[in-house]
Length: 508
Image (cartoon, rainbow, N blue to C red):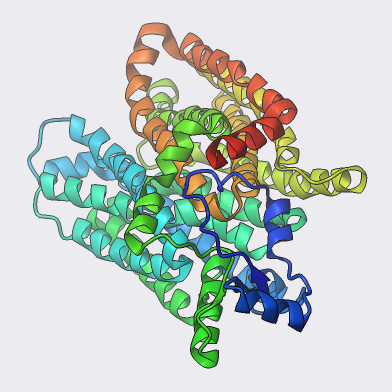
């Protein structure tokens, strides 16, 4: 469908970004216009707007069949699981790696894991803008292929420095972190996103939990290199699935291709989409590259949510990197069995996903009956997670400190897992709804603090526990988590006003 539109150049980034999902959908709906009006506007120099051909246009990803949409969600979730599995799968075999390379510096044990997170800070800042310029399709393929190459290079490393370098590049090549939540926004309408967002949110939580279990058994039986070969093989299989199933899901790119084809077929240069501007390719690329950081440091909404997620994600990695030593020293678990201590955390994450799945869409649909849907309606589960998270930390710390039977701290890590997932999934859903077509940049900005927390907070774990013990050490973390509970409450009250203020500020 085409319709007339004024071709006045749009304001450059950053905050035509702050549009709600409702506003984005209204903008994307085709409007009817008489042929005479369209002809008059074309003659007067105004462009003809290319849009989807009605509500049921199958070129719109939100109109694809449920089977196809859920196949893509399962596929990108499987990629995220494989990627995050690779994050920490080598942790149990790190001493074995140091022995083979004759390294006595134990800092490498932590560096082999944490250097990945540093790479993953940089990766989304590249991936998200490129996906908003060129679409999701090519970025998924390019990132996955590079990830496979760097994983194989890790397996073939001949010294510790080479391994650390390729682990860093592995983190840079991760594309699923920034793109998966945005793909959910591409495929599903606002009131349908909860279940899909829960699925893509589970994968990055389960991968690090399952990784040490697999890494411990695989490294013990076949050697540490097979930990990396497993990731290489798994991602290679998923890339084949991508070649068979993946389609472009980004509305902006789909409509730009449609307009380009129509210009070619009709020889009418006035055909364009609402997303095209008079900016040069260089200007668009520059704006896209700086957008994630501009959003992070100019939007109070994104900054506060990113800071919260950074703390939560840092807690996840702090617990995961210290749980082995806690259960070995406190409960005398052997190196073969200690990986099973992660099962409580994993089960808690699964329960948290079901909590999110049942509340995210339900709350939005209930509110839509009496008022307009707003992104802030995604936030109530964050309040629930905000209370559950410190409860898990308090219980884990003091049961381990008092040497209570080992099931007690395992149950506590399960409660912690519920709190982690109930916090992070709704936050990502909120950012997708609030930032519309620029959700990938918002998620990438959020990933900066998230991965900083995952990189540096685990380094604070051992000295924290040495100074304060497990009880008070985890209690300090719990009190910090409690301090963030007002954040979602404030955004539920003032979030809409902040979004409108930011939009006016950047349009001025």
